[in-house]
Every structure is written in C-alpha cells, then in structure tokens.
Image (tube, rainbow, N blue to C red; front, side, top):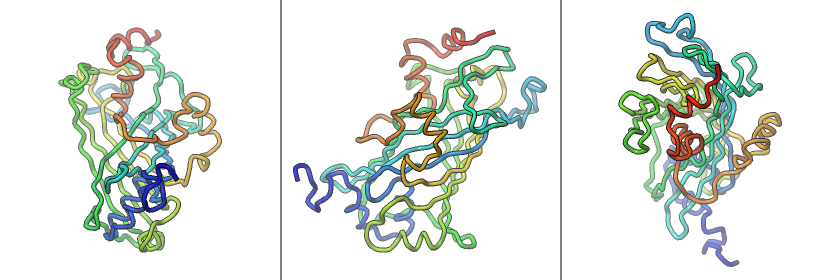
Length: 304
C-alpha cells in the first residue's frame, strides 16, 4: 500500500515504537499522551475558576475566593510518529468554555469586570495546536516515578511556567514586566488492574482509563481586561479530567457547542506544527497576531 510503513501500518503509527518500551512508568505516561494505536482520544475537563486576591484588597467588588466561572471542555489528542524514526509527538487541540458559576452547562458569553464596571466578551480557551515533542523513544525510555495509593497507580507533573511575552510577542498584556508566570500541577491516577493490563507486552488498543486532578495559578485571563500591573490578584483553576476513547464519547450538549462555533476541535491535528497556549491563542485570534494591542482590544470591546 503506497505510503505504508515497513511493519504494515501507517508511517505515522506510534505502535511499533511504543512496542519497544519496557519501563512500566513509561508505558503508562505515554498512554496519557495518546492512544498507542494512533487514533484520537479525549481528556474531558471539568472544574471551577476562583479569584485569588492578596489581602482581599478588591472586596466587595471582587472577593478573595469568589467563584467566577465553571469550566467545561476537553483536550483531543493523538500520538504521532515522525515517519522513518523512533520519535513521537503528542498532537492535540484544546477547547474549554467558561460557564456559569451556578450552572456548568450554561456557556457564558460576556463577563462584567467589577473593577472598571465594563462588560467584556468571554473568550474560551481555544488552543490550536497544543503539541509536545519530539520524544526519542527507545527501549531505555523511562517515565516519571510511580506511587501506589490503595488500589491506584499515581504519578505527578508540576510545571512552573514562565514566558516573557513582551520579548517573544512584543505584547505585555498588562503583565508585570510583560512576563507570564504561572504554576500547573497535575496528578494522574490509573486503577491497578487497568495499569497491569496496559503494561503487558504489545500495543494496547483504545484509551487508557485515566483520571487527572489539575490545578493552575495564573494571571487574570486576557479577556477579563485586568492588568496585573494595576490590579492585585490572580486566578486559581481547580479541575478534574478523565479519558474518553473518542470525540463521540463527549456529552451531546458540549459537542453541540463545539460544532456550532468551533468545529476544528472535533479532531486532533494531523501533523506537528506551532503550539499555542491561552495567551498566544488570544494574541493570534483576538489581536490579529499583533494587528492591535491588548489595551486597544479592551478599549474597543468593553461596554459600559
């Protein structure tokens, strides 16, 4: 078959490379990056966003600990092998909607900024793409340390994020020094029976049943139009995530929202490319890659 790999699969099929991995932790962590069979999988995301305000200094307009939003969405991903190599990428897209703090299924379209009294359009997390790699995969490839808690196998990933957007994009977003500083914290857990089944020799089919606890502390989201330099505080995200075998397994209400406004997010990317986060996505899509500034966007979109 034209374009087929020597092993009979597609040249981007991760299975032949995955099959060479022997370390249990590596086998499990790779299956959070994507299905070993190379098909799309989903991590459904559900949680809440809170105001974290030093000294409760914005009370009563904005209180420390106030729940501002629920968040509902997913990351859709796949493992991709660079043809002719043992290198793997995780390729994904991520769409997460800010929803009503009292009703998780009600997507909010606008948000009233209690500091300036203006109402702004809510921009969902819509990152196309979120790619990691390439990872050279050999039989000596190892994963993170594992811990056994009761009947689950657990591992963590805590990531301090620091990006100088002033230098890389020429846009400071009202951040102190133009630097985005955040902390991302993940706990992964897999039932021991699932872990045993997914680490046997060979290439597992389907998505591994995985649960993730995720927390993030980060500056105010760009659409909120709160400059970190002027308004003390930040956001705390606290969410849960769980694996699904495919896009079809997502609840109908969420699929309907995606298909109405963001159909690109029905599938993972087909090949490696530039990666986005919430801030570069805002820069690319709302600011026209620098055609306008964040301050100008806020001035143009804020409604009294």
